[in-house]
Image (cartoon, rainbow, N blue to C red; front, top):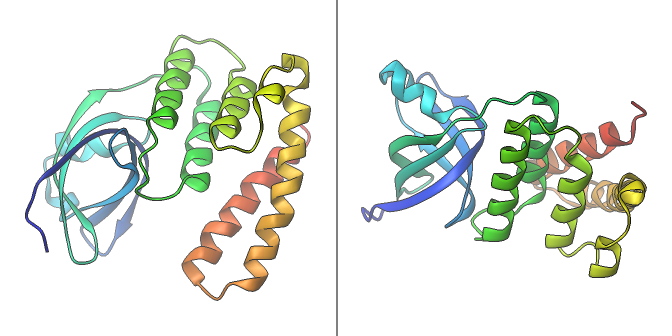
Length: 199
């Protein structure tokens, strides 16, 4: 196990309990991309520290590489957001969580989250079409010509992408024996299917 302290700045995507006292937090950071860290004995920490790992928070954090997990050693809130449209913010986090690889630095995705949260924080409505199109462009699933299409066609384009990738993920579920991958793929399928439902 390395004792070298690593530092990052990122958005908390989610956290969950593990065991009686520990917490796992998934963060999308500028330096490491999506990274999972273990907060040991989180329930024994002071309340002010527990609250620093809430989803949507922008945090400065430090960690060391452990044998099985990255061990969180320090965390401080850089910025917290209040959203008028919490549903849109949740979809943004779900998209980043489900469709980005672990520990692959991607500053453009980081700045897209930052930009999207800033717009939502300002109470600007209906930013999802913009976020979706730019995200899929950065992920290489659409080209520059498609990026320049009018706003009226954004949702139609995104639905086409969803339909294409939905079949792809369903096929992967049938061909893999890795339960962790299956769980992740099933979450992706749920997200796609929910997006296709009429409002």
